[in-house]
Amino acid sequence: MMSESEIITAREAGFFLCHDCHKLIEDRGEKISERCPRCNAAIHLRKPNSLTRTWALVITAAVLAFPANILPIMKVDFLGTADYSTIMDGIIYFFTEGSYGIGIIILTASVLVPCFKIIGIILILLSIHFKWKTWLRHKTLLFRAIEFIGRWSMLDIFVIALLQVLVNFGNLTTIEAAIAATYFTGVVLSTMFAAITFDPRLLWDA
Amino acid sequence: MNSFKAHITDLLACPDCDLLLEQRHLEPGQKACCPRCGHVLYAPKRNSVDKTLALALTGLILFIPAVFLPIMTLDTMGFKQAGSVFDGIRVIYESGYFFVALIVGLTSFAFPLVKLFLLFYVSLHLKLRRYPHDLPLFMRCYRYLDEWGMLEVYMIGILVAIIKLHHIAHIHYDFGFVCFIALLFVALASSVSMDEHEFWERIEEKPV
Image (cartoon, each protein chain N blue to C red):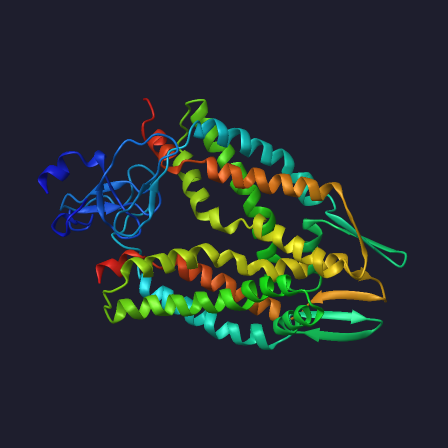
């Protein structure tokens, strides 16, 4: 087992870790070449401007989340009458129909996961700003969970794409995407990029 | 600290918490986790290059039928409508949501295809012990694209669409459905069989 005194980070030992191939590179004091000798990626001690970029992206996501949830995401045309529905309408529809399982899946992927990502990243960023040094392992775990679930929010967009192709019966019934689809895709993209620009080592540096 | 610097090749740092650790030899099936934050540092796999090569090639063969053949046909009151993954991108583009169409096109079509191609290219060259100068670049591209290929999310999307539609119409499953499921499993297996640590070490150890 490792005792407290033996804990030494790569930075303290004078090593750079390549972001792309995870090769350890020695800092020889003089102006080292700025490219990784193995994979030619640019070398940084930490991801550049990590906190600023992550803040910018997470705020973007939070702002876009409003139109994404308020505006209609899908247009159902039935015998010439257009009916617009928001994300929440779709979820409520499943619950009233009695399909609880599928309702929970959509609720999780479209509402809970984006909320969890935005709140989680803000929590992690605040904890770095205020140097909260407790629960570091759990916060790293939280970040890994945010990284992992990021892509699953695209589910609703894929479902709409499939419905739009399949439910296309001329004048009888058609389904089309509506304006909130763009905002929702924006939320997914900005939260995924926020997870990419964030450097979890900043938690441990604080 | 000087003893550390003596053998830098025996050391590694955790990418999530920067802890400096000694590298140990592991047997396939074992994995090394960071003692401080729990990050999986490396997990050697048996015959990683061979398996990845075989799976990536299979994936490339399955790709065209899985994406272009209709997944299912909806049949209601005399109307029949079939749809493929590619049709999904096309209709969103045609209805004017270019940004959504672009992202759906990239994540369900372009990135999964490029990922399979990159894995095929890198593992083929490692297998043949050839080391073209763009091999590290291709490995890096794969790393960046890894989370942007969303076939498994699409699969759940297909299941949700089936549940939504099976009340209102009869659904026929077409050959594309089988191809898509096969592609999904092969693509997942190829990502899992790829041992990044080993791939990078083999790229670095190229014989001159």
